[in-house]
Image 1 (cartoon, rainbow, N blue to C red):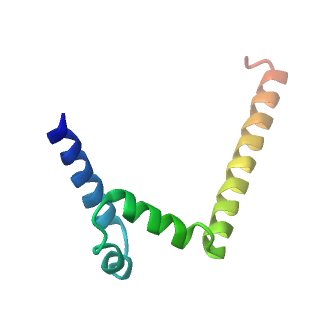
Image 2: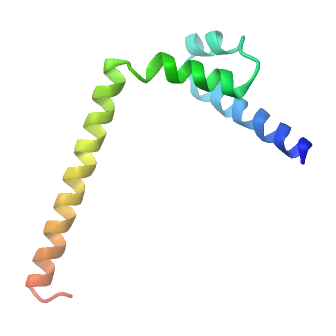
Length: 82
């Protein structure tokens, strides 16, 4: 059980290291645990205006897609395709 947990944590760190830019990688290498890395990244980037605007754009796109899908389903229902 302990070995599995240790392996999972190492894999998580590895994936995280591979997915960040070299500048961020240099900052997070000093942290010992995955939790320390996660807490740092969360505090550093959660409030960033660029991130917030990207999240808002993503949610707006998802809302538009859902609206368009609902409209299409409604149209198909009216036309008797369902």
